[in-house]
Structure formats: C-alpha cells, structure tokens
Length: 224
Image (cartoon, rainbow, N blue to C red; front, side, top):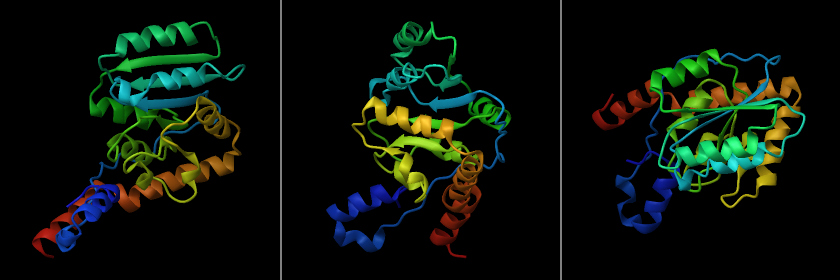
C-alpha cells in the first residue's frame, strides 16, 4: 500500500505485474478544527521543515526581501544543520526592513505547532522544497483551512484541488514566481480568500482526515 498516488504510479510503471497487489491509502492528521483568521492582522506566512539545503528555506528570505511597504510576518518552524546560517542570512536580508517581521522558531512539539495554527491568524503556508513525498506539514496546514503555496514535487500536488493548483510552483522556480503568488494572496478579495480557506479545509476532510483514513484502511485490510 502506498501513501501517495505519486508513489503508486511510479511503482506501477516499474512493476505493473504486481498491480493487483498495489493500492493507495493516504496517511492523515488529527482534526483540531478551523484555525483563527483575522483580516485586520498583518499578513502572516508560515513554513515548517528541517533547515537543510534540500528544503531551500533561504529562498523564502530572498522573496520576502522583495516586498516593500507591505507589512508581513513570517514564522519558520524546524531546525537543521543550516539553522544558524539561515538565522544570519535572514538578519542580513530582512533585519533592516521595518515592515517585515520574522521569527525562526526552531524546534517545537507537534502540540505546540497545532496550538499555534489554532490560535494564530495564518494567511498562507509555504513549502519550497526541491524534493518531497507527500508532506504531513501541508496536510496539517490545510486541516486548519490555511491555503498553501508549494513546489510541484513528489506527491505534493495531491494536497491541492483544481482551484488551488494555480499556487503550485515548478520545482526550479524563480523567486519572482513565488513573489507573485504571495502578492496574489495579499491582494486577493476577501471573499475569494475565504473561499480558498474553505476549499483547503474541504480538501483535508476529503483526503487527509486521519479518522476517516484509518477506518478505511482497517476496513480494506481486515474486512468490514
């Protein structure tokens, strides 16, 4: 059994003779409810990953540096061998822009992260990794109704519905592409944005609810 359609299709091409024994069963995340959202608060971006080269978190810094005269907040959760390097890089590029507030939070427990999503007003989740499976971090974000911008790698696009696919970046994106996607969210009509939040939550309910997925898994393997 595979945890993404992408992995399933890859193995199907290589080992088609075993197709009858292959299936897809998504993982899932717990339901903590919809996250808080307040349109009066500064636009807030969150990223969550290890700080290692493959995750390219420094590219977020490069893009945020392009914003002038727009108040933004960015929180990054996660540590890694390049954490101190990222810290210095962010201070150098963003530290003198009074409109950009950022916090490299580092390592937190899953409960702390879920509490943050629940009580904070997060506008968009960003993942610019050059390689992924099907990120649990994205499942968690959309469970709170947080729209996502991410690179189209691995099974990531399976977390996107047809409307939100416009916010999938090519693997080798240029910084202006990410800038334009974030800017699109910043300037989006509030009704359209609320709809994006609702669609994100609905996508999670349909595909990544742990309660539904685990029950389906048990039924498929052990019978109803």
